[in-house]
Amino acid sequence: MSSEGNFLTVESNTGLMDVYVASPVESGKHPIVIVLQEAFGVNNHIKDICHRLAEEGFVAAAPELYHREGRHIVVNYEDRKEFMPLMGTLTNKGIIDDVRNTLNFLENLPGVDLTKINCIGFCVGGYAAALCATKLKLDKMVSFYGGGIVHTREGIQLTPLIDDLKLIKSKSLFFFGGQDASVPMEDIESIKEKLKKEKVPAEVVVYPEANHGFFCNERKSFDKEAAEAAWKLTTKFFKE
Image (cartoon, rainbow, N blue to C red; front, side, top):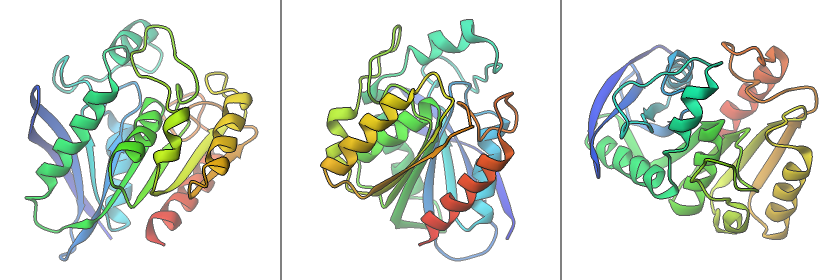
């Protein structure tokens, strides 16, 4: 299966927002996957994920969460002085608004099956995906190494989700790296315990030797073995 993709412009509560959309070239109705960016913007890695999902038969859409600060903002992986202030502009309400507006826009696109809405996110997008699962009606949700789910973080407006995890109704899959200093094992255990206690239909997968960002082949922390295993589980999960 092949795919095609490009940026489309969406009306949002705070002006125009660009969304990268990749779709299967095959005709028919395809389920949706909202793809939520890392701290570095909708860069080549996020676009590649959209295309990989499209090749699996999904319409994949990645809204630019930094659109209030400008268009097509992409930050170098090592430039903490640039991406941390940008991440600090994100709010829980803003993310939910952006995803709702993206879904409203997708309603008018041909070839979209609105009965199957899924979400996947990485890094801050992993947090955002979990947030969406607590607020929106999703079929399935996948969160990769989302920080800030358990504790507040300095300079970040996003609020912890640990007490809201009970609101998740969608089947969910959480991935973490055992060597991730930004999401320590005690936080992962807290998430596991909360999901189990609240009987949330979720699975938590930890790759003991992997670090934060292990799925991104453009980062130093890329772990090929963990990334391939996680992608295999993700595609199987979305297709079940």
